[in-house]
Length: 79
Image 1 (cartoon, one colour):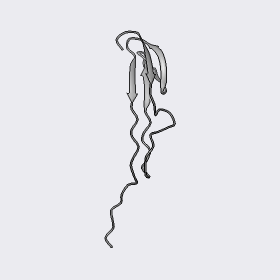
Image 2 (cartoon, rainbow, N blue to C red):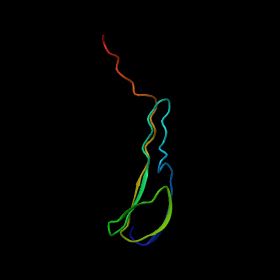
Image 3 (spheres, helix red, strand yellow):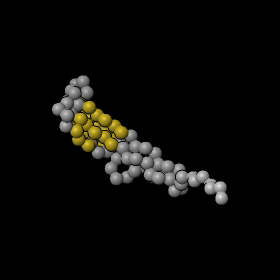
Image 4 (cartoon, rainbow, N blue to C red):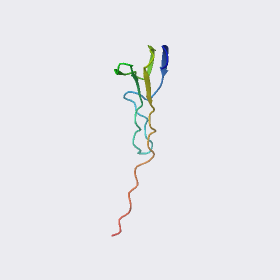
């Protein structure tokens, strides 16, 4: 951030609930919201937060990945 501001986040799929897969597909990855202060300290913000940040702080949003569709197909073997 270039100057002090109030930061508010309202996000989903952070924490223990990953995006689900369908028809046997694997779940996706959860998202992560982190704030790195100008002094190097990093904190996990969770899915919902409202806080004051200062100049030099960095917000990192890692968005969740979507869940998979169906099970992985295997190649038929030639017997």
